[in-house]
Image (tube, rainbow, N blue to C red; front, top):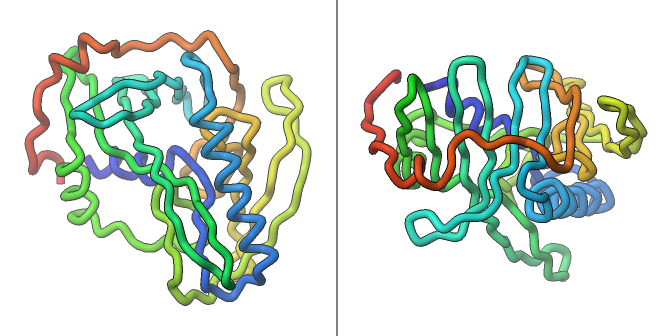
Amino acid sequence: MKKLFGILSGFLIVVSLVFGGNNSFEIEKKLYDLQNSIVENSFINLQKGAWAEYNDGTKAIYVGEDTIDGMKLRGIEIHFPKGTIQIWYATVKKHFTYNGKNYTLLTLDPRTVFINTGGTVYKINYAQLQLAEQFMGAGDLSTILTPAKIYIGRETGHKVSIRKTTMTIGGHNIKATIITSLDNGGKVIVSPEVPFGLVNSQGDTPHLVNFGKTGGRIRMGAGLRKNAQKFSFPVGF
């Protein structure tokens, strides 16, 4: 279970912004624009079947849109050697004022998870996800690495640098952005030209090795989701 919620917090990488920190407004504005571009192009505007393959053998596929528990959500299916997970996200617009100007920041909030293990499909609903996040003590990852947690107005000393680059991934030439922490040297590479945004990162996060805009095969269809069993806590904590 702890591994699952590590995936939830680290798999779909978009840029985590801290407005009100010690970065210059120019840097924060670039991060803001990058965040919106990745959410729009690497998630919202994907075609069903878009996929990304990673160096640890996992493969992520865009499932498309569905209404689950009355919520209009968009899903990603992740294939592992021993099972399949679908994570369904709501696109949440966060409105705020910074330096006297109004902004809208696109964020992604996981609302429902389906797990297929040993031929049985389990469902983790939004209330359970919130409970698990609370139990796991998810912290403020500051400026670089969290998908749906956008912290606005918190003071932080975390500074970053941003550099544009071009890369070749699986025979595809892409434009990417390297975000480097000036505190600890940590780096993440993201791009709105690849499904789900993540290209490379330090630590245990998977590295992108190939991707495609169509052709991914989805394992868990609407019928399996409809008949999923309710997941019960505490399991695996």
